[in-house]
Length: 153
Image (cartoon, rainbow, N blue to C red):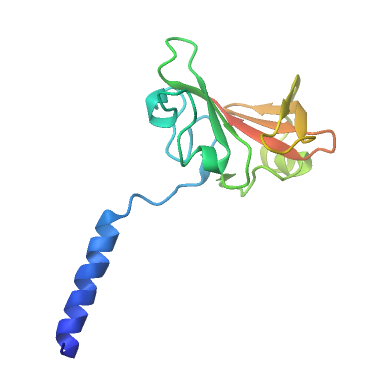
């Protein structure tokens, strides 16, 4: 095969590969608006939870769970993140400290919550929340963020 023909074949293969790829993962947390492409109050639960009731890939692989909207149960209500994959525009997420969160967002409303355990990591839990409009940072006794929850503002 001649060099120009080889370049054309490679170009065609690259184009076909790119067409076959889905959209890139969006790891952004936007308080009150979204986690990746999932929007509280807008995204249908069927997009993120399968017929068996389990969270569908890729969300389960990235530590994201969903609570249905209380109105009719067909839309996503609260989105909970438990891994470092998703971050805010300030770069904050699971594993950061409450000091970093307060520095970026100011004084929160502090809530005591029922202890939440991190799936597959016994002994890691959160029992206090730093609440801001559209986002809640659940922290452990050492002030480390263990969960981030995003809800409609």
